[in-house]
Image (cartoon, rainbow, N blue to C red; front, side, top):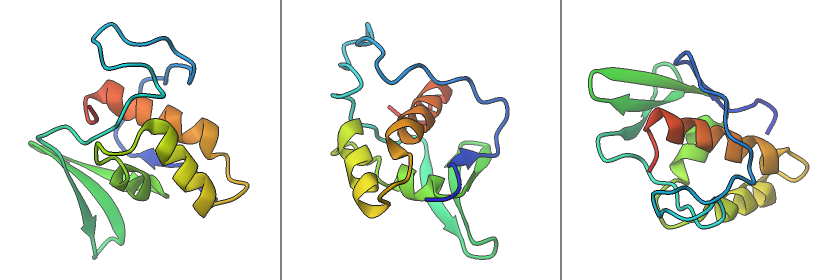
Length: 114
């Protein structure tokens, strides 16, 4: 991975630290969280632009870099740690342990991940 995953929607809220305590809503801590797209969202690939898109009601977010591949792993079956481990195996030496959790937490804060 050479480019940090990002989305073109602004502003993006700063992500909480990776070692945050368990949220009060009962979803468990960061190690137990199984990211999944919110029900109203779809991940699509735009062949014309050659990029991945998050399709929201009345809005489209263009995903840049490897963001689409990362979001594609958010199917509710893998834990956050599982996603990081899988990406670390695919991209040895890439800073996935710090960048991916921060990226996914930003998407969660936007309401795009559950």
